[in-house]
Image (tube, rainbow, N blue to C red; front, side):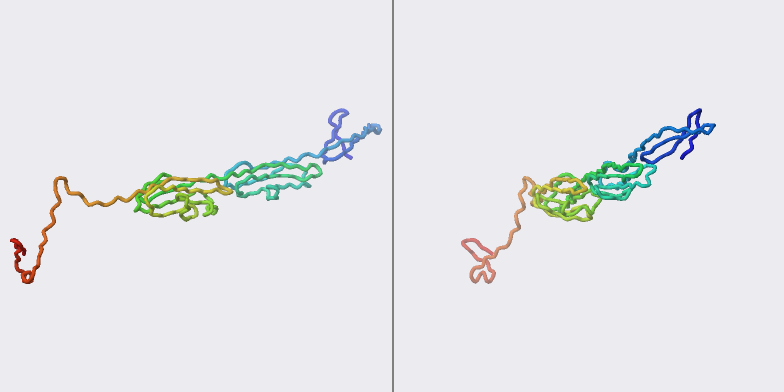
Length: 277
């Protein structure tokens, strides 16, 4: 039984917060003479409410990204309700702070049914896009260094080729997804986790260099492809004499002709009117 409060002549008030359910109400009154009177029985139903739920921290981002996803509620009289946060069907902590690979993640925040509330569920997507990749190629060896440009070098100079990516998570770079090709043949080796180097003396000709990151779950693909032109070393030629002047004649050399005994004695010999020494 509850006591009602008079708020004006013949008007009485009673207030109570009741849980969800079916109820009946009947009031009694006694006049100053002690006579009782009552109202008919009235019935009423308090329906269960739908819980108020929300999810924060979802949206679209670019890898790498550390997300903080949280499900929240502000429901009264919900001591008998459980709230849970799921990511792609797996129960996770609430909030969940995590760096996820690129992909699409469906977060669900739900509540169980209680005395005053129905069960309820909401969802929200967290999208992690792949990070864009860049590859730079550096050429050096002829006394200059260029970046992402065609290059000219002499055949007797050693060509130095270096290809580098801008990937921050270097553990995701390997010889399987980061490569350097010369005219379709893979060359070079990875060093410092994010660069490939290649050294060579090349014969005269045109060389097509191609460096590519082939992409993976978290990074897009990218290709850089400049050319290298190798030219011949100039041939050394002796200088020509000045115009109008003949080259100097060679110095005369002594010639000895030996004949018979006279030659043995180093005497002069008369041959047909000429004397030869």
